[in-house]
Length: 252
Image (tube, rainbow, N blue to C red; front, top):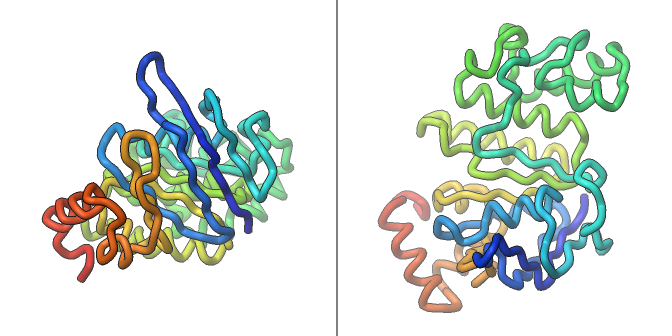
């Protein structure tokens, strides 16, 4: 397991400051949830950590090592996007071909035998049934696509898993089930996970700690209970009151 730290991290897009001198520490093995209003910098922060965006200033540390100059594929970080970003023309799994699950390992020149030995048990663990293997993403439900996206991310054995609104397209009954599967997967694989959501109920159910982001920086980082009972600012208090009205069962 590895830790992550952001120090004075800043990212601008023209005149817009998306991330503004953000500081954050994520402990080894922690499940940290980032919440905040739309446009506050949540997704940009994940993209910076993944290496998909380059910071204008500040430093990203993984286990104490600066990684600003480390390429995307060398950071040990995988990101699951809100849309899942599955290849629409590829089937789910076939160790003989390029598919959504095999692509990361084919690129690494793994043999068909090694791919099968590694991915078939992983698919089973994630509930990706063999009947799904020959389907394309458009033939899968939201929950099934989520499982395939998780499997593809885990195929490279990441040290840090980033998730951007992964449950936003899943209906409420399956959403509860997928929460449990995500947490189980996090614990079984001893991951350090950073999960972005606008749904406070998801955050409270999953998080060791919640980081509330505002205008590109982190306003407060604490356990869900402390954020509710001991908000550091009036903004945090108002944010949680508003969210509780929207998601009344978040603290049940």
